[in-house]
Amino acid sequence: MNKDTKKRKNTKELILKAASTLFSEHGYRGTSVRTIAQLVGIKQSALYNHFKNKEEIFFEVSKEIFNTPFSIADNSLSKESLTGKVFIHKFAMQYKLLTFDKASEKMFRLLMIELLQNEGLREQFMSEFHNKNIKMLSEGFFIMMQNSLIRSGDPMIMAYEFISTLFYIRLQVTLLRFDAKSTDTLATQFEKHVDFFWESIKN
Amino acid sequence: MNKDTKKRKNTKELILKAASTLFSEHGYRGTSVRTIAQLVGIKQSALYNHFKNKEEIFFEVSKEIFNTPFSIADNSLSKESLTGKVFIHKFAMQYKLLTFDKASEKMFRLLMIELLQNEGLREQFMSEFHNKNIKMLSEGFFIMMQNSLIRSGDPMIMAYEFISTLFYIRLQVTLLRFDAKSTDTLATQFEKHVDFFWESIKN
DNA sequence: ATTGTATATGAACGATTGTTAATATACGCT
DNA sequence: AGCGTATATTAACAATCGTTCATATACAAT
Image 1 (cartoon, each protein chain N blue to C red):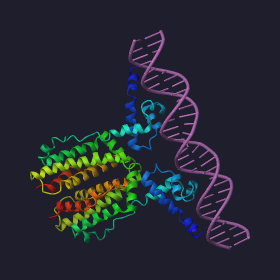
Image 2: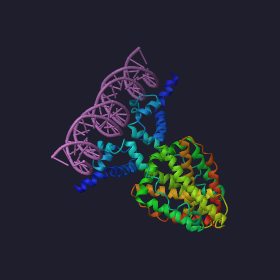
Image 3: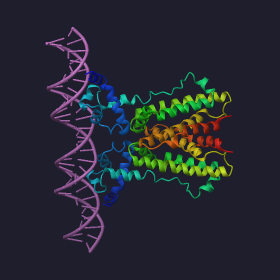
Image 4: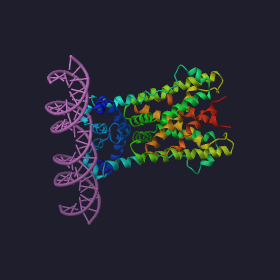
């Protein structure tokens, strides 16, 4: 009774959880409302007590993709960036953490699967995933440059160079883990990238 | 009569062309055999005179993805890599060319769309797109190192750093062009990457 | 206890899917 | 000219899709 009550209460959340799992494995089109309902343990018609339609379920799920922010807050940036290599190391480790975090991984997979099928997702990818990081890193490198911690150059180019490798490693990890393959070879890749990159820009 | 004859003759090719366009825009699941047939100008049942089923059409199309090799042949590598920056510049320009080439772009889109839905594509991506390039570049950097053209270090890490940014730019270009947006900002990004990278490794 | 509300089920719908079979048409070959 | 082969059409199929509706059940509030 008590269990049932509890179960009833959070059906909506269970639906979202099931849907996010299925969407991140088979995409929007590859996931049917019947499969979602089955994973929750209800019939498909019951879904419509909680959501208007399939699209709304996907929309709710996809909102989760970009609300896992990097923990380096913008205001502490100028202080952080004075630490030079520590700053970029910290950033890379955050990135690594998200790469191997189960929930983040799921959302990253969903993003990759639907990136070319969903214009809204593309725009969010550009603004939240790319521009935001480029901006933050550019500012960091600019400050480092002003304090002669690194050689002079275009901070945006540096940001590009730095983030692109992180992204590439993440994509590879995601692909390997999707097939339950080992990511041992890539385990230290993030750190190696930080080392190489810092050698490239340091004064 | 003559025209019709010609049309008849290459229906199979027309199907593949139509299918590759549709698959690269809407993915495998998002493309129906009726839509393919419609684009060719025939009824869907006629497709089955040329292909066993939908999957076979996709398979034939996807074979095209990885058969656009980089023109830098393996045997000329050791000679090429002695040119140092010229070598990596050449490589990057090849990459840029493919990025903006219509046919290559289409195949790259298809690859990205189906990457997480098709295990075979993932494996090919890893072996053809990743490992092959890493290997070629690693060997190049190794030779440059032996000839003191660049600073010492792990050639594979260098290869990683070099290819990841190229890939990241290509992905961005592909996304922007998918929405018919301008890629002006990214036009010189490849060259800037080469310059930055060479500064990072040169002796 | 009764009522109202929220949530579940079962059944059905129209649309679309990939595929097949019977049939028609056009072409090259002898 | 006629025959055989290749390729087209028309029609239908079973399956699956997202969605709706009438109805049943359980819970909270009165």
